[in-house]
Length: 247
Length: 218
Image 1 (cartoon, rainbow over the protein chains, first blue to last red):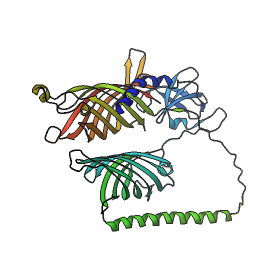
Image 2 (image 1 turned 30 degrees about the vertical axis):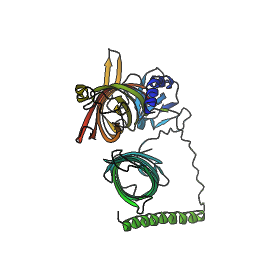
Image 3 (image 1 turned 180 degrees about the vertical axis):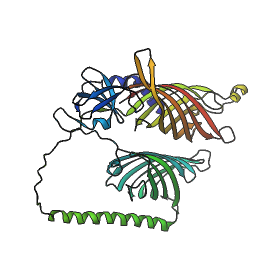
Image 4 (image 1 turned 90 degrees about the horizontal axis):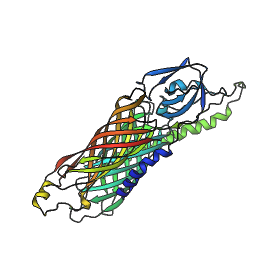
């Protein structure tokens, strides 16, 4: 199946660009800063090759991260930083909003995504997760993890809530609870190898530290209880570290 | 984990959420009491969010050669999708597959086959963080300049080989050249490392891949 998908991706790959929108007409804005700096590429290191004065209008073509490609009437195109375009007006005189990262996005964001890796009871774990901020301090969170051990492999999918105590602090602690499903597939070389799927619940604590206004480094401990069909429930410790990004 | 610590955590969360709801309930009661003394004479200004095509995703395919430790070199192909968070940092998910060759032991002994054909399929995925370490421009002739970047990636994932999934760490370096605003060429090398006990004793295998890729921003 994977090979089929890959082949399809490879064959269709070159077709995708054909549907990509061409740089056509975009919205226009009027410059309010003393000048706009046109750079030759979408990055702070690219040289400034053109300047547009206050009062002139430019056309917004496309955006990549914090850089926006604009065109002036003469046809000259260049990349301008979002911060310079924030002080522009529409031809009708209304202020223009271009959303971007600011210190407020630490507490005012809505979505988070992240990648993490760590240890799950001796096995390695690779996780991807997403969270929705119901309030600045309360997150609804979903995790999908691949467990890779010496004697067994498996999958773990959980949903839960997390409470961040001081989201405005540079390093803030959080706690979380949730539940999910864990599937363990013992490796074929073991005797009595039997796949099993069990429900599980967890409680966790962690620390999040902001690297920038949009990034944080997250370390987390979770204690899982796996509700097995045997006499005893299984208790598992998980330690992970990962990156999180806000939208 | 100690069961008491579980209970402590759970009650902590319960208390914290109770405290939150209590505060907001008080605000809701207090708000309508405030009388409007001064009518504000502020002209309302509509902020407009211009329609602009944001292109932070990058997706495409790659082909190349992979040297699978003890199993020779093979053709490899795969797909990658990336999201550019800032001009410096991106996240990347990659999946690749190859058919491993035969070990020299299998070739020399003649009739021994260590793996079946399906076990010889080498498939890996990884989730990585990338850093555009050396951004720049490349010049083609005297009239064309194209943005480029030398980037480094570090990722974790899994490799399925010889009927077994193995935790995998990848380390890569690549060169990205933006031929147009939305199309990029990639030339990159990555090391796909995982522990394997396939040939008797456990060791970390290093599988080097060199690949050429084509991606589109959207």
